Length: 147
View (cartoon, rainbow, N blue to C red):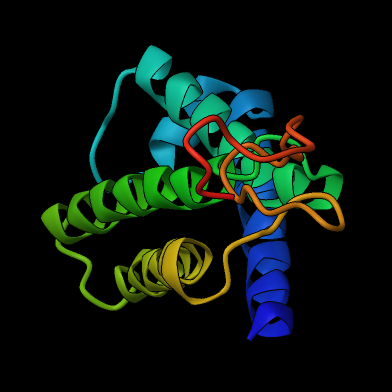
């Protein structure tokens, strides 16, 4: 399952790097011509930045073993963006093209669920603390004797 999640995360990262990068590079006039509903330019830039950061958040924490709890949060944030993209596409009257953001959103939801519950990242080798990605500094028994 871990390999499947890495493949899904990699594909999603490529999709969101491309989509977010295009929102940041393409002139606003050209972008708004292609959209079913006119959205403000600053909002489109915000979505572009969020998509790029979400793509980075899907890959880097697990790859580097730092702040690994951010991966499912990044995926969940991308789910929210894809819900909005699906609704905007449907509001423009296009049912067929709305399937693309719907499927991408479902894949993002799978990545979020998978990294939260199915196979969460474990951080550096030997780590027991899945949230921080760091080993405990304690080497002996705890004061209450539970170790």
